Image 1 (cartoon, rainbow, N blue to C red):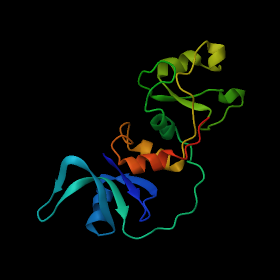
Image 2 (image 1 turned 135 degrees about the vertical axis):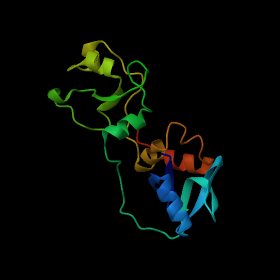
Image 3 (image 1 turned 60 degrees about the vertical axis):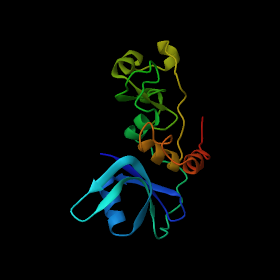
Length: 174
C-alpha cells in the first residue's frame, strides 16, 4: 500500500500514513493535498480526487521535540534501501557490524541491511575479521529523514525541491 507523507500546517514532516488514512484526512477537510501522484486519481460515486503523495494538515499540531529517530529493523532496511551493504544485492536481514556477542547493540551506527548469504558468511565476526568491507557506512537518520525514506527509494526525488532539501539538511552522518 502506498505511504503518504503528512506535513504539519507549518510544513514540517510529521509522519507517514497509509493512503486510506490520507484520503480520510482530506475528505474530512483536516488536510489538503500538497503533492499528488501524477496521473492517478481516486474515484467514488460523488467524489474524485488525486492520489495524495504529500498532504498538509490545515491546523497546526504541537508535537514533542524528537531529537532522534527510533531504531527498528524495518528502519535499517528502509535506510539502506533494502540493499546489502556487503554485495549490493537485495537485503532481507539486518546485520550487526559489531556482533551482539561482542558488545554491539541495536543502534543505527552498528546495524546494516544484509542479504542472508552475507549475514551468514560474516557470522559472529566483525567485517574486518570476516574479510568483508562495507559498501556504505551506516548513519543515523533524522526523524524527518526516516519519514522520507519510508516513502520508498524514489521518495526524495519525487518530492518538491524545498521539502527534500529541508528534510535532508539536518542529517547526522557517521
